[in-house]
Length: 535
Image (cartoon, rainbow, N blue to C red):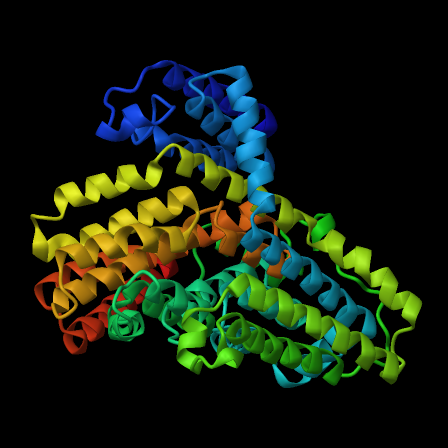
């Protein structure tokens, strides 16, 4: 019966979409005449991601939903031309996304990391760490705090954070009967939110690149205390871990894990399969050493890509680094060293190592497929002028409501990042606009820039087409739609408190006053919710 209702709802949704698409755009921007599409820089440019997100949440099937969104984008771009849609979807969408050098580097990093994780499992390193952790971590709260702590320590890059924390903490959380949905949330909430408040990270470099005159890093550091969403997310995670409070869909998953030992809540699939055929002689060092080498190699790879070895300072090299190149080179070096180490340790034979290569690749296929579709969907929205449309709206309203502007920027950044699935693209649109309204010396300008960063992370955190959200699902080996649906209530709780905090910061742009008020509001909200759940 449930499947029948779902199919009926899906059909009705598709019919509604068809009707909507048949209606011509009510208004066109001035630049529309220069574009080939009649829907360029209109509200309709946001329709493809809206459809993809809605279908993913309704049908619980992410691949088809993303592809439908891509096709809708192609139809709008080509003005419903069959040939134009076909060429735009495949040539300028999927193929162009896969061929992009940055994206290729990320895909290579994913594949190599999948192989390294498979090698660590096969060598017995993950199992040995799980045994060690079970002896030292006795409680569910301890396992969650350990996951949060590791996520905070790996602040270099969100992709690297998601997959590394996932591979290390999966056996620990499994031993403590923590659901994969909860693990995915902890991974996701310590990825982008940590990177956006770490001055030495790929995210700091991205934000800095949007600020002229070399003041990007200075502005980034000044904005950290006002990044309410990131800071309050960390506070919320610790509160949830220490109190054991859960609500929304997450409560069901945690109850199943705690009472029935079902960490997947019936959503286990091929991507969730854990390699049980591991070496019983594995040691904790067989996991710790490759992870340590991976961290060091990726940092060196990133500063290398930024010109550190050509005379640039460490800060400048990190600001100019290419995360794709750095992570790809770092993971490749780590793979070579890990193979040599396991051969010398004789925990794996050469044949067992080569067998891990296709297995590691297969373990990353779901993440690669979702990422490819997500990138292609972003290409559709870009070709329809979605960024320019939002930029036009922001510029039109930036002149008034100055004290409320931080809260308004936060909401716009949330919406744009959620719709497009990219934080960095949101930075590129909103930060230059904000700096055009406020000078760097204006405290309210710093608050607005921080609101832009916080909103971008919030939208990225909630969006099922966000690459970081996809990575978190892959790192926890959790069903992707399950991760999105269980995480959404938690993210929206923090977003609500952050919105109120930005209203306060608009009137009092002082971090020593606004931040403590925001923390008190967050803790007060959580305590009230805890009491309501008990009653």
